[in-house]
Image 1 (cartoon, rainbow, N blue to C red):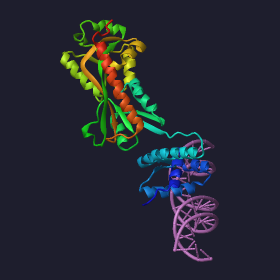
Image 2 (cartoon, rainbow, N blue to C red; image 1 turned 180 degrees about the horizontal axis):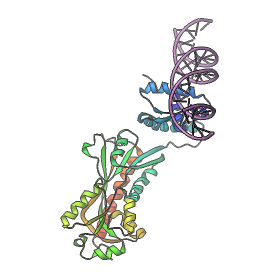
Image 3 (spheres, chains in turn orange, red, brown; image 1 turned 90 degrees about the vertical axis):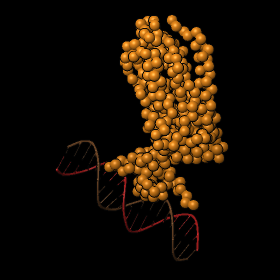
Image 4 (cartoon, rainbow, N blue to C red; image 1 turned 45 degrees about the vertical axis):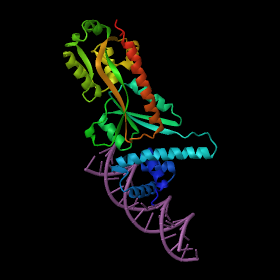
Length: 314
DNA sequence: TCTGGAGTGTCAATCAAATA
DNA sequence: TATTTGATTGACACTCCAGA
């Protein structure tokens, strides 16, 4: 069996971290040519370039980015091993790299991440927001452990990924005091030509809301489309339009943004998914996230059902 | 446009450790 | 002890960029 030369990997890792041969050579007290030779040797071992030479700059290739992520974990564990061997208090930790779809409400995301961060042995969190397609690509390439989304991955996506349903949330319609006064009477028929703030067509929730409008035979005016749930909520709080909000966030919208409930979008449900590259998840923090999320979202939904018998209408 | 500095690549020589 | 192998060094060349 051919073994990876960890000395070479360490040099590559330092070059990636320092941002160039010369800086890495300075910090390692070697000459740049030494690092250059070792780097070439490692690239030969991997069978592909780890850096793209752009003029005087070294930019990580996709293979290099992946290698750097592995090297991060390898050398962090190495430090922990040294600490343990020398009797210093060292706890074995593991980082969590999460992709978050922009249309996911950030307070929901944080609530989902909290149990993962409380997991024994949790190291550090890396959370990145992007479009679903980009995040799924990174997940498939092994650069993310899990993607949190409000829609399952498209079947035509081409990547081998698995969606785990975390739970679902009913959807309510909120407005600031002025718009609430204007559109509350006669809800939902009153929504004809009402200014609506909606997630973009890529969000899982959007098609369900569009269907609901058709069923109610109302055609509101689209005042804004957002792929960022936080920005959409700010626009709603500033009176730019009526805002669909997950029932789990009702108290937050009423208390923090002083918005008022118009009514429920009966039958509209938003689902949350954890998408992973592996069918059976092994990462302890991801497992903790999924277990806690299923409990939380199910509880939130049943609690909401209890409250729904007498919706708070001012 | 020229020039000097900085960053990177290549090559030959040397050194040290492992192996026969 | 001679040979092999891998790591390292120093010299030099090349490219790019910023400033004159």
